[in-house]
Length: 308
Image (cartoon, rainbow, N blue to C red):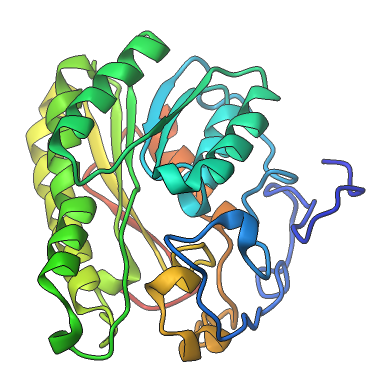
């Protein structure tokens, strides 16, 4: 349990304490206002819970070496914090304009006594993807967890509003970068290593405003299953996590139309949006030896939204 005196909107109840999932977090009503640029966790209202004051580790990833894309905020940040508290060293990527968030996550991880390196760059850049893996291996002394989490999501009212630039950027970041990062990482992954891809409920229930984004997430599901069959005989497990409506900077920074923000997540059976820290245990499970017989699985964490 963490000191509740922190000036924060996040819970201090750890993830191992019995609690009502309906009321663990309030049903938020974000303002119908967009965040500028790609969005900063530091500027969100209400704040997202990254688990910085609540996630309690149990040594499940002791000595592991993880690379997490998009690890400066949202799901990536919560996963990085959880991995560190479970004993892993972490390299995380971020866009240069999100440095404030990256430094905050690094500070939290350093406080756990773990190695952390933050590397700015754009996943659309082929050379960056290749160099990123090399830098992670050098920093960590190896690599045995790859979390492909970085993503791009821009809501538009109709397909005619999707520019070629947006379409190509969404595919480059969301799925093509995964191919490139896996190819670069494979020579370093020993048996027992894991690859975890972030997909979405949008792969199953695509929103009319997210046609390009949703189609990339369906591709990630298929990529995960195909790659898992290829790598399983080598002792490398590949799985995915499919979040539902999770409150991250991605949403108010263009991921939802502003008018849709006040109702974000309220249509789930739990009646609320999820918080990033509620995703972290899924990534920990899939990264740990506890899931040694889980291969090619898409683990849905979506507040009860029915999916195949």
